[in-house]
Length: 413
Image 1 (cartoon, rainbow, N blue to C red):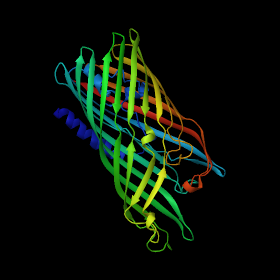
Image 2 (image 1 turned 45 degrees about the vertical axis):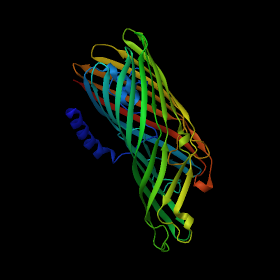
Image 3 (image 1 turned 90 degrees about the vertical axis):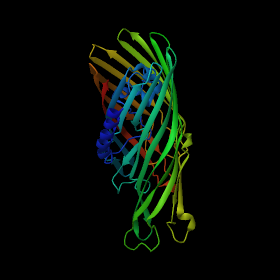
Image 4 (image 1 turned 135 degrees about the horizontal axis):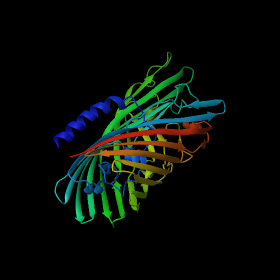
């Protein structure tokens, strides 16, 4: 256990120095390990390596003794936005969500597992003077979950898991505000918070060739506290847009995971699965300011942006092929529905339904393994109607794509 904690601390220090300079694509993240990335997340029924802590912790009963696993995904997003007077490309950034897992067999019937990983992330950045600057030119969400689990066998081939989740969550946004007769005010909002949730899961080996699993993660209600700051051009009247404290509440959605893995050949397995995300809990984003932004309007101490996200499905399939005692090859596909309705889409997250094509390989020797993955994510084109009140102009999303590279190291002892 001391060895696991030392690895966790060192890894957190390393990643902490990297990720603070990087940004994510998407709101929900599923990059919990290179093997899972390569399989399109179709690892709920397999659940036989330490990353099962994030996918389906009930499956860690398949791991004898103890294991440590750590790694990162490197996410490189890109999107073009077309307006009547030109095309604007998003800035090129990289998000590096880390993952760390530790599992320990306590006895013949019980296991302990600890996971540290990112479940939510968002990063969209354009030049500050781009066409959509009054809605957003920068948005970023970062999160880290610490998730201990207790797992026990309730039968020879069936296990249950119960865990708690402590999640740190940070939100940051930047946009322009036009002050008539003065010019643009640069508005920045940044805050963070920590909240708690829970999870439960089941795994079963139904036969020699069939394994299946179900997992649930609860809603997490984040109460964000931070600061609103404004760069005011010369000539701005006194009292308008003062730097002030701010707070907000975001209810992150509950999720249901399911998958069934079938051994189709002596060295080949296929898993199909789905994830149900109840995004409807994210109905609005309300910002409360300690001081009004307009000294003559006491109601200017709050703003509300309607979201009204829809519940969605994410469907996946993964194929794993063991070609030798050392080498394994993997392929995956995902169809991921967008939760964002036409009447609330904005430039913080200009997106639509997504297709993910992935492949990867693993090398195993003695008591260690290393896995690599590559995923190409394609976002469907989307037309956005103008909404004057939200500073949204008629525009089109094109060339939405993301490259994702994953690497994970595992040590068994």
